[in-house]
Image (cartoon, rainbow, N blue to C red; front, side):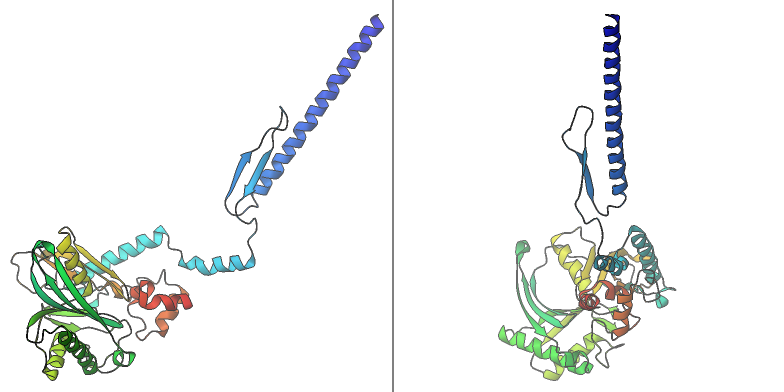
Length: 367
């Protein structure tokens, strides 16, 4: 009896030892599997998620790792990422560019620094924004790219208006020809527009939107500083473009137009938006080229040569497309930006414009 009892205890102990060893082996296997999974995570590239699946037994569970991107990158993908790395702009780039642009604007507004500033900040002599109650009939001419537009606008009461417009092309031969040929072409298109609307006998005021760097010396007088956007017409830089337009109209002798004002397209954008929203204070264009204008206090405009009567503010045409001409953007220029600039008709100029505007995006992509 005692022998049987001892044998029974021995069998129970052996069974417990076997069960314990089996459990230890099971835990060791599970631990090894986890370590392999953790090691595999360090080799996975891209996004992944880890999620538990149903338990295999009461004591253990398995983990399933699902990768949603390839675990290895192909040589082609690595090459594309290497090419595109320079095109990624981070917060440091933005912060540095913002500081540089602020400094350039302040320099452009300063009487002493203006001459050497890349962002010229020209006063436009437009000092009042629309009230929203203007009425009348007006012509508008918008020249700023490979096409230009003539508009007949009739503004009525209660902010109602009717607009009739026509787009005319500027042939490449004219874009690179003489200044007289350009303005004769514009005058011819104006005459055609007026004739088809039967308004030859009416003298209407015309607003001339001239979207190139221009130094204004009055509301209806502006001197072209330099051509951009693919134009290179001879005999225009340094000249009053309103005067050249008036001369071309006079040469025809068949239309009468009162050129009342010259303005940049950004100024026109600001004025048009302010007519609908009186809180608007900034106009910005990102199209064939790029530019911005804003309403500034006269006291902050060192280059202001007008009176100081009310209203004491004026719209400033920044001409920020030239930002970077003095190396301010060299820290973020890519090899493609440099190539586009090198192959352009005005190397070293309008760097900011060449980086972001429509005139150059196709070539940047082709590069």
